[in-house]
Length: 508
Image 1 (cartoon, rainbow, N blue to C red):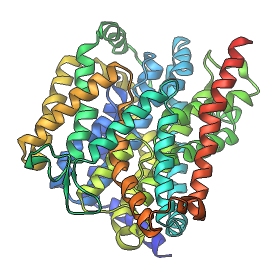
Image 2: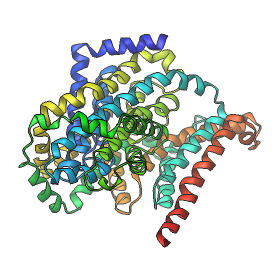
Image 3: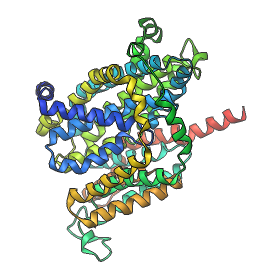
Image 4: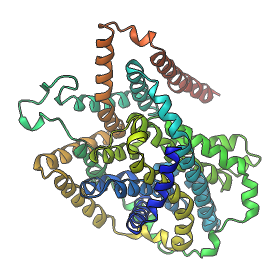
């Protein structure tokens, strides 16, 4: 009951003109970054991170939630109009949306993408708000050995979701864990791995890791690769003319898709979002494949299926709600965006965990309300008001755009701590992440390894201390045994059985 009152108060907080302005601003920023190929909501929040030092916690979190939801939705804009997904989660939408665009039904495709995003995003937010108290109570039952097994499970899932690059996922994750060990020991006030310099005694802050990995490396990556083919494609977008009334999907088409498709895809997306490090791409792919498998019109898929668009967009937006669950309850990010939102929480002195709803629900509730309002109201409203202008976003010169991003990233990393050393670290990690991306190493795994590494070490050492060094405590503790068994199931189905099935299909 107390949490329900906090939620109602959170919605009331959004009605304040200043907080409402921050939510709308965040939605606009997220839409812009989500629609421009190469930019994502992750980059938007990474650039926002230094600014949160001078902002109140509620506006910061409200903006982050709006950016998250709008960035996920906006990826469908260029995916539909020019066949270039604005975000990786929109790849399935590009298959069907661009096929409809070529038939002259691009506005209709965008309308179905917005409707799916609205339904999935709002359902995901509602599930988040409804199940958070239960998740908080369940998390209190997990003891120290179980927490170690949970973090280990999260790291293993992060690695095995890297299709065809599991070994590189292991390397990137372990590199992040190793970087996290620099500084003061997690159990004793003793510096370690500081290489004889006092500047590393306190360890490496999350700020240079995030800005370097997601902002600096993106600028270097875009500057290095030849983008001429994309420039030519984007120039066509400015000439596309779409009328507002064409965005409204006919009721007959919505009935043909069916309420069950929206609901099942939303539930799939929410459930996948809870898994650490999986993200919207996996949610969209699974929901799209499931919708195609049971569709009465499978021949339409690949040639402009509105059902496919609805399933993919409902799933990747409902994932937003699911991704907040492990981040708020355990400090385990569900995807790259929530990894950076975790940084915003930590910067503002909020410690994720089961006690978060008891002690600071008044600060978290407006963020959850912003996630819901962004999906339910702002997505359809923005599409109807600004839809004809969306495709013109991509006509901005990329050279100017990325130069500005580089300046903002470096200045932001300095302003956050007024440290030249931190700014240098951001540049260093940006270069490191760039070379990792060049060799197809997942940089998201590096960041999540950095975030989860200290918890993994801390819970391991505490568990061994409580059991007098007996490692069997992880097999005798019920909560630990549960997560270890769950980890074995995931490894079997995602890393053992899947390659065998793919090999059989290839032979056939």
